[in-house]
Length: 359
Ligand SMILES: Cc1ncc(COP(=O)(O)O)c(C=O)c1O
Image 1 (cartoon, rainbow, N blue to C red):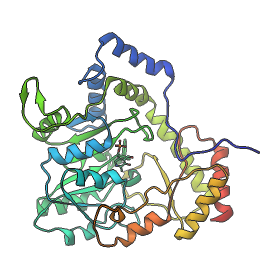
Image 2 (image 1 turned 30 degrees about the vertical axis):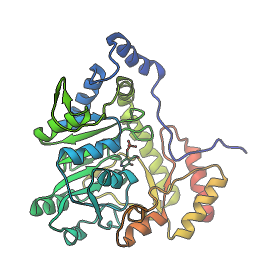
Image 3 (image 1 turned 180 degrees about the vertical axis):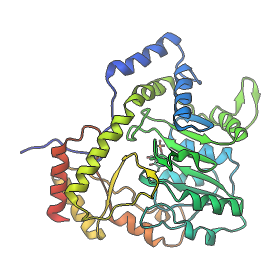
Image 4 (image 1 turned 90 degrees about the vertical axis):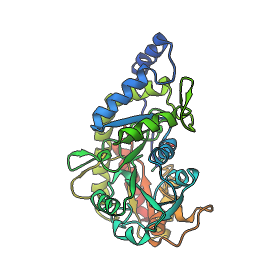
């Protein structure tokens, strides 16, 4: 029997008429960008949803990271995780800072706070950590270290839309959090992102940085164009009402994988007190050879998984770093399995069956 190919994710498209409803508003206002009414509405809706003091939309999650670094005045060395998407590291380098990698906790795959203090030097100014797969970092330990050493903290929360920790949005932690609203993410605006800040002055700087550094004829700082258009914000407003059921459907997929794989493979663990958004379903195979065997077997059967993330970022050709054995291990053995809205139960069953045939 021939099956349609299954990819690791599938972009959610809201009903056409719902997107058109928002596009019609852009047609009526005749404003397509520059902080238009839909942009303002999405910005305020998300700020209130997460109950954070400041949230600014950005053109993408990479610029969100870069401008968060800049708005907080971070320079010199930035302690960061080697297990994330490349943008976490590239943003540090692009802003003229130096990434200093600290290995991960193999249980959560997030940065290990027990290793951070040994990496701090007089020119360390910040920690940039990722809530990888939406699994919260050990925010309490990181907060204590940052306070003790006077460091800023940025969380790359690209995967953490609607993730909660101890009953509050995970975005409540750190000096800044950044989000990605890329089409592959749980909530999306096609391309897009956001920066959450807790300090009003930093938020004012961020708004200038996002918009060329000037207001009318007055130029205050070097800026860039990181604005999100009305057309993108319109997609966000159309997707937003569906997010709860997008999470619910992924939760059902995760439960089914859990039943079918029956604890056979380790998985990055959620800390106590965290509420997952189920955005990803990564498994950790026993070793690189079995990861490859499973991935290849799925692929010949039209099921496309992803090594999310590979390589460990300390191995990028443009950084220099000592080995990070745990991150390199995770990059070698991890496989993100397909999960998305409307992934059919029989597809989940077929995927699990194919894994168990060779895994
Ligand atoms: C952890 C992480 N950080 C940053 C980004 C960059 O976001 P964007 O693609 O919106 O630039 C991504 C995107 O995939 C990501 O997964």
